[in-house]
Image (tube, rainbow, N blue to C red; front, top):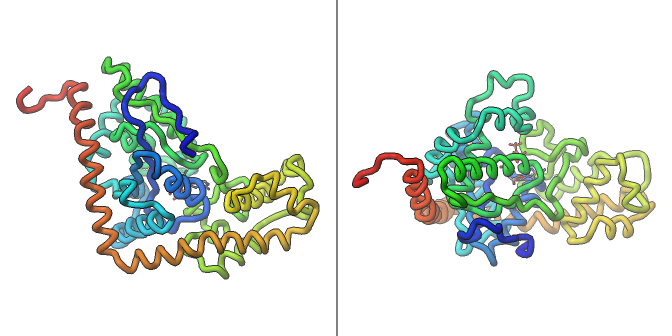
Amino acid sequence: MSNDIAKSAAYQGPQRVFSGVQPTGSLHLGNYLGALKKFVDLQDDHDCLYCIVDLHAVTIWQDPKELAQQTRHIAAAFLASGVDPKKAVVYAQSGVRAHTELAWYFNCVARIGWLNRMTQFKDKAGKSSEKMSVGLYDYPVLQAADILAFKATHVPVGEDQKQHLELSRDIAAKFNHDFNAPNFFPLPEPLIKGPGARIMSLRDGRKKMSKSDPSDMSRINLTDDADMMAKKIRKAKTDALPFPENEHGLEERPEVTNLIGIYAALSGMTDAQVISQYAGGQFGPFKSELADLAVAKLSPITDLMSRYLADPAEIDHILGAAADKAAEISEPILAQTRDIMGFWRRGL
Ligand code: AQP
C-alpha cells in the first residue's frame, strides 16, 4: 500500500492521509475491505487521520438518542480492526470546527454545475430530490473540507467515492487559482486500488454492498455472528452455471465475480488463483470455505468491538484527545485560508 503513495510534483507540503466513515449503522464487509483494512495498512508509514463523519451522517435524519452511541460504535470498529490511536488520529468530525468553517468557504468556490453531476446524490435521492436536505446535496463539498482542512494528500476510499474525490481536487485547484495561492491546497489523490475496492450486494451483483440496503441478507455486517455470516454466504445469489474455468468465464456473472473477489480480498490471493483452485466445480464447497474464511477474519473483530463498546469511557478518552490533535493541525491551515481570502482579523 505504501508504495501506492506517489508525491505530487507541485505540492511541497507533508504527505498526509485522511479518510472518514459515517456513523449511520453497522459497518459491513465492503466498509472493512474498502476502507478499514486500508487504514490499518497505512498507519505504520504515514501521518493518518481517520474521522467518524457525524456531520455527514445528519444529512439524512439521525435519531439524536442514537447518534453519539453510533459514533462510539464506529470508533470501536476502527480500533477492533487494528487502527491504533497511538499511530493515527481517530476522532469525531463534529468536535473539530475546521470542517464546517472550511465547508462554507468551499461552498463559495464549488460550482452548482459540479454538484449537479454527482451520482451519489442522484442514487440516494432517487425521485425525491426536492425533498432531500440541502446538506445531502452539499455532502461532497463538506468532504472536500474534511480532507483539505488537514491538507491531506491521500484518501483511502472505496470505488464509490472516486467522483467525490475528483470534486475535492477541482475545489482545491479552483481555490488555489482564484485566490492566487499556487499549491496552497494539495490536489488529494484517492487510494482506491487493491482488492475489496468495490464489494457488491450478496443479493444483486450490480449494486454495491451498502448499510442502507433494506435487505440485511445483502451484506455481511461486522456485528453478525458466525452462523449468520455463514447463512448469508450460503444464500448469496449465484447462477445455474458451474464455477468458471478462468477469468473470461466471469463475464456477465456479477454475483460470481463478487464472491470470488471477496474470497481473494479476504485470503490475500488473486482472483485468478481463486478461480484455478475451484475451477469447474460446484458452488457448495466454495461457499462453505468462503464462509469459514469470512468467520475467521471477521469474528475476532466482532469480539473485540464488543469489548471496546463495554468501555465507552475509554473510547471517549481516545476521541477527545484525538479531537484536540486534529484541531491543532487544522487551526493554522484555517487561519491561513482566512488570510488568503482576505477576512478581517484582530491586529490586521
Ligand atoms: N461496497 C463497498 N465496497 C468497498 N468499499 C465501500 N465503502 C462503502 N461501501 C463499500 C467504503 O467505506 C467507506 C465508508 O463509507 P461510509 O459509511 O462513510 O459511506 P458509504 O460509502 O455511503 O457506505 P454505505 O455502506 O453505502 O452507507 P450508506 O448505505 O449509509 O450510504 C468509504 O471509503 C466507502 O468508499
